[in-house]
Length: 305
Image (cartoon, rainbow, N blue to C red):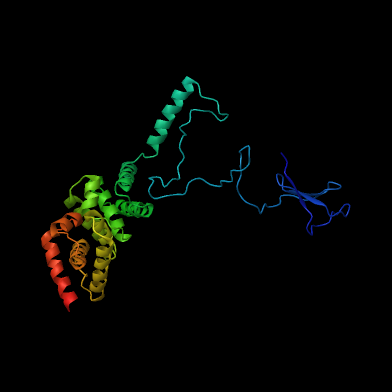
C-alpha cells in the first residue's frame, strides 16, 4: 500500500509546470508534483513517529519491547525462542519440527548462561524474585539488591560463600538503603537460613563495598508493631508523638529502632489506658522485654523533664 501525503501548506512550486500541489510519498521518500508528476526531490528524512505496525487494524503503536532491568541476568537484552509452536503464518508446526524447536529452546536457554558467574547470577536473581513476593518488597528494592549483588560479584565476594546468604544480605542492605522496614529476622525467615549467616554476609558487603546506610527511623516500625499487637490508632499516634520528642533531643541515635518503637508504644498504651502487657508488645516487635524496660526508663525521664 503506497502512502501519499499532500503538502499544501506553503510548499515549493513545481519547476516544470509551476503548480503548488506537491505530494509526498512516505514509502520512497520522494516529493513530486501532483499535476505533472515531476519528482522535485527524493530521500526525504521522515520527521514523524518511529513506530511501525504490522497489525491488520494498525492500532498497535508499540515502538520497543520491555525495558532493561538489573533483576534479569542478561538485563533483558537477549532474545529467546518463543513458547508458541507455530510458524510465521500462524500454522501449527509438524511433530518433527516441534521436537527440533524444543531442543533449540533448551540449548538457547543453556547458552545464555555459559559461564559459572552467569549461572550464579541467574540463580541469585531467581532467589530474589521469590523473596520479593514473600516479603512484599517493591521493584525498587529488588532492583537495588540486584545492583549490590552485581557489585559483590565484581569484587569477587561471591566465591566460596552461599548464594542464599549473599542474596539475603543484599536484600537487607537494599531495604536499609531505601528505608523499607524489614528486619534481619524477616529476611532470614523468608529465605530459610540462620540470622547469623545473613548478618555475617551483610557485614562483609557493607565493609567491602563501603556502603553508606541512612539511620533507620523508629517511627516506621510503629505501624508494623501496632498492627501485629492489634493496638488502637490513638495509641499509635501517641507513640509517634513520643518518638518525635525523642528525636528532637537526639535520644534515638545508636538505639535499636524496633526496641525504642516498642517502648514508645508501651508508654502510649499506659497513657491512653489501653491494656497491653510488655510481653504482647515484645512478641509483636521481636525484641526482648528487658530491652523494652530499658528503653522505657529513658523515655520516661524525657517525658518527666
